[in-house]
Image (cartoon, rainbow, N blue to C red):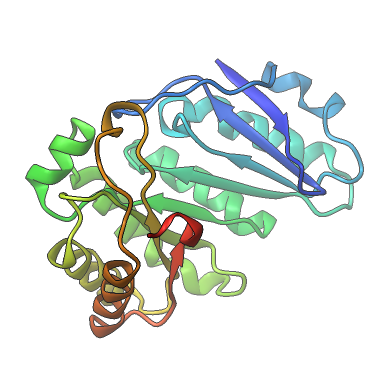
Length: 229
C-alpha cells in the first residue's frame, strides 16, 4: 500500500511502499493515497517526490502514474522525481521511471547489494542479474543530462558479507559503464534479522573506498559515517 510522508527537509515529499520483494521490512507512518489524489497533497513548497523502501519496484505502475500526474499538475514550478530501488523491476518499467527522473531533474539510486551471485542470493533471496542488466542499460543514458547525475549507486557494507572483493567487483562494473557515476558505501546498522552483526570499522570503510577508487570510480563517498566505530 503506498503512502506519502512529508519530510522534515523543506520541499521534500517521500513516497514509501508497503511492499518489498527482498528481505527487508519496517513500519513507516504516513498518509495512504491513491494516484489521482496527489494534486491535493503537493503544496507550492514541494519540489521533490522520492520513492523509496520497501521498494518501489514491486509497485512501479502506481509510482509512474503518480509521478506523471504530479508533473502534469505542477504548473511551472520545480518538481523532481527520484527513485531508490534494488532495480529488480522489468526493463520497460525501469526505463519509464528513469525517463521521469531525467525529465524532472531527479535521480535514480540503485542499491547494489552484492557482486557475488551467492552472496546476493543470501542477502536478498533473488538473483543479481536483472538489477545489473537494468543498471547497465540506464548508464548508457546518463550523458543525456550529466548534471545533476541522474543515476547513482550505493552498497550497504554488511559485515561478513561485503568485503574488498565485493566492492572491487561492483566498482569495476560501474567504472566500465561510466567512471563518473556517484557511488556511496553505506555504513551498516544492526537491525531486523541482522541484529547480531557488528558496526563497521572506520578503517575498513576507508579501505573499501580506496578499493573503489582504485577500480576507476571518480566519485566515491561513505554514507552513514556516524555509524562507523
